[in-house]
Image (cartoon, rainbow, N blue to C red; front, side, top):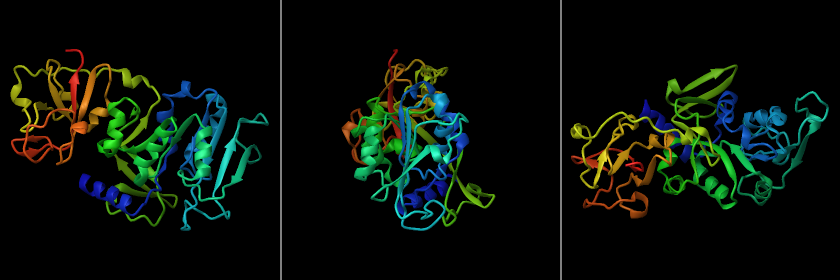
Length: 338
């Protein structure tokens, strides 16, 4: 099943099937941890059709409760007619909402400013960038195939953000560098299965990953993470360690090509080991920068000292190997308190 899901995600990336619309319940679960960050701020949702976006719904209906200054959302005008690009207008649009005016605490159409864009609303367009400059915090589900470029833009313009991405983006060297430098980290409600609205023509082979409710097609994606540079309490919680290395050395083999031990589960990180450890990328979901130091990541056959962070002791294959076998991508860490 995991292989089929991975194939679906790769296919989505290659075919630029990027329209995965986030459920309101998932937005509500995550946003509850950041309410103090939004007072007096302008929020920009720049990858959302405001006519159906649950991000726009959440922020417009919670505008006063969050104390927002302004809400802006843009819609990319696709060239294809489907659920997510209805071609109701001749151009892409952006919406501005500055709060309730008639006292009913409901975002009414007459309270929402609707403006045409000259271009297609792409987040990279000059018009969208000007709106981005106005924003304090960006919250959205960016295009799957453009995640690197999207995050690069957020960093370039020094924006606060809370965005959704697949767990595997952790292995992108550009993204991992930001994690290592504490410029990006995991949100709170990660992992598990999340359902996303998708256009009806999307071809999803794995039956257990699709469902239809009231005529709407949904795709479930496992290992979905929130990524942010907004502080949250989870980031400061210690991983509870209860395993020991000494006396159980056989459970922690040393890599063939690195002076580091293999830890196959985050729960198995030993409490008493001072050296380098290789852990699964899911460690990022539990990472407390006060408890551990991230040295690097070993995930590809080619060795890059800036990425891996520790010396390579092998000959060719730079992936973390145990008895000649690949152990998948590993984050190289060290306990700061030993």
